[in-house]
Amino acid sequence: MSDRSPYSARLPADESRDHLMIQAAKLYYDLDRTQAQVADELGLTRWQVGRLLAEAKAEGVVRVEIVPRARRATGLEAALQARWNLREALVVPMGGVTDPDMLNEGIAQAAARWLATLTPKPALMGVSWGRTMAALARALPQGWAPGLEVVLLNGAAALTVTDPRSSAVAEAVAQAAGGSATLLPVPAILGQPSTCRALEADPVIARALARGAAAPLLAFSMGGVSHRSALCAQGYLSPAEIDALRAHGAVGDILGHFVDAAGQPVDAALDARTLGLPLHRLPHAEHRLALVAGAEKHAIARAALQAGYVSVLVTDDATAHFLLETPNE
Image (cartoon, rainbow, N blue to C red; front, side, top):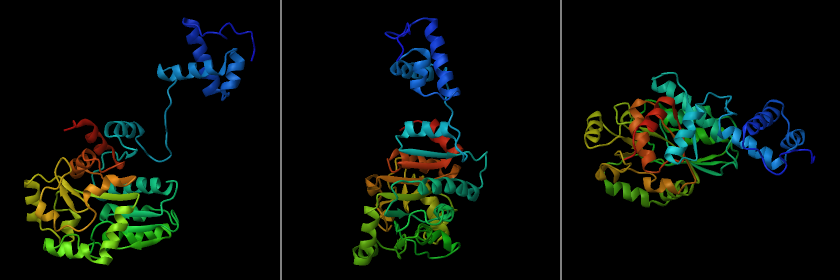
């Protein structure tokens, strides 16, 4: 290190400091010099260069812009992570699109990219079912997690079938990964609580439920309280029952459990007939990947965040704005 620098002991505190800051920033960011090279050219120590560069970013002299290859609203992502204490947020700009299928495809592709780059690769994963999750399964690249065991988290035996792909999510995710699927071949909602308890006690069903509860990675979507609900389309609930749930304060469902704005079940009797992973188990998983988009799901997205069910959120920009603008309860 050269001894010629008048700043070797202490950086100046006047305009010459700003001049040095700009010089260091140009050399480092525009001319691709290393910090050691910048230090040598300016007659500073590496510690001083590092301090000048840090100040340059803090004071707005240098602005670092993240431009991802895939369309992402990184500013909204950072704000969501800070506001809701998320490990990760992925926000897809949809340009005002409101069509549910297009929204699902957009966020499903973003979620698939996140899963495909996850390291280390998971060995066990729990998934829910539905239209959004079916879109995720279609978007996953082949061989993204060889040997992965995929477990269905809630019952998916449909009473009526409008789209068979929406209930075959575990199989599709496992096939794309190059792994295997553990299914839960029971209805999502039973007619009697006693029937639900009996099925949960069955060794085959109990084993599948236990595998789901043990999965360190859970991926699930959320449903709004509307007649478009997958549970309504699959014949579990009638439009009149959906309307009654809304009247009782339901804002949507997570894994078949209809919850209020705080993320708590609104109908104890219905919840006792719902077969699948209990909501209180969600926070125990290391990664809780939630996919949600569209105005009818704004309230359920907020409820899930409020209750701490989500660690990784994938959503559209309109939903992100809603989640940032509404106050905490």
